Length: 75
Image (cartoon, rainbow, N blue to C red; front, side):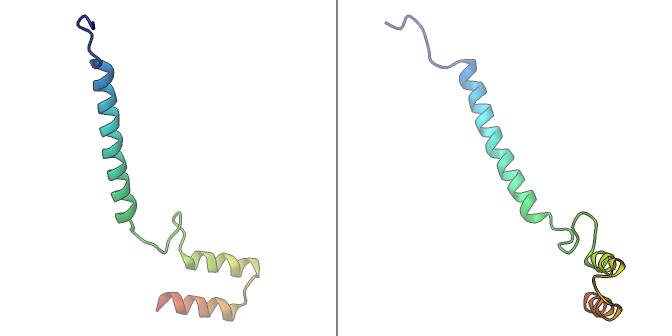
């Protein structure tokens, strides 16, 4: 006989809250990741032009290449 013992109570309630809370969190996180695209061209606050300026300053590209990149990005 079970003598009044039920397999539920607080552990079952806490598990349900944890489970459904996780589901809601994952849905909200997924929506945030797919819709939060403020500017896909910038990465950590740096634009492609910033990268081109850095490459020009390091001497990796010539003035003509820099000007061409700048024209392409501004058009």
